[in-house]
Amino acid sequence: MTGIPLSHILFVSTALFFIGVYGFFTRRNMITMLMSVELILNSVNINFVAFNKYLYPEKLDGVFFTLFVITIAAAEAAVAIAIIINLYRSHQSIDVEDANEMKF
Amino acid sequence: MSASQIIFYLISALILSSGLLAVTARKIFRSAIWLLFSLLGIAALYFWMEVEFVAAVQIIVYVGGIVVLIIFSIFLTQQSGSELPKAIRSRALFSGLAAAFGFAWTFMLIDQHPFNNPAGTAFSPGVAAIGNQMLSISDHGYVLPFEVISVLLLAAMIGCIVIAMKVKPQEA
Image (cartoon, rainbow over all chains, first blue to last red):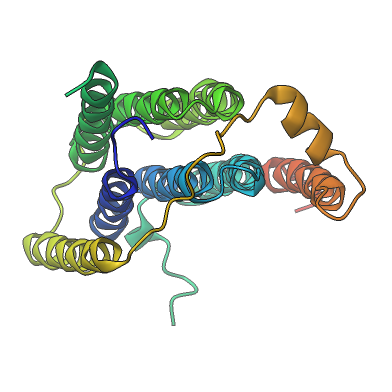
């Protein structure tokens, strides 16, 4: 578009996705895991907007998908934080290793 | 290299470096602040791609809403000054390898795929066009997902209240 090929934007979003995956694998604290999930969702949003802008400039579907993903991510974060705070009340900890009653 | 290209690479460096710090910082509050910078960088990327409405929504919902919610919940559940335990070395090594191989493989596929850009038509997502198509009931309108997502938000709100509600001692 302005001299940047599409693959460079896809490089950024792919790298952000796998940074989020790495954080999700290594972190054991539920709030930091939630933050990694937010990074993953954001990288997907970048992809939607970039594909819309570069490959289908006459349509708007990528923008709508981005808006819906942002809405669902907000709802998901709210519910997840409600669950985390409730877990903290009953376990005094939000480490995933401490919440193992339903593990087996 | 034009100014627009330099700005793109600066924004990308901001997004990736603060994203990496957000998943590796040892203090949870700093981690949340790095996440904030990363999300702001993504909003800047949307501005760079000239989708101002999505950029504004990104700032309002993520930076103004979700990060504030995350910081509140950190204050409710952690001693924010204390450090998180270090990740187990073998787990960090293998997840790093998995992420690196996944990234390499995905980017190799992307790099080999020929994207054929249609030339000519300019991308101009004005707010009026977005609003018209969002609430249009024609074939390409998005009014049904719009309504469904409003029901989803209502359900999430009720769900949060039910989950967070305190059970009174005589009922328990």
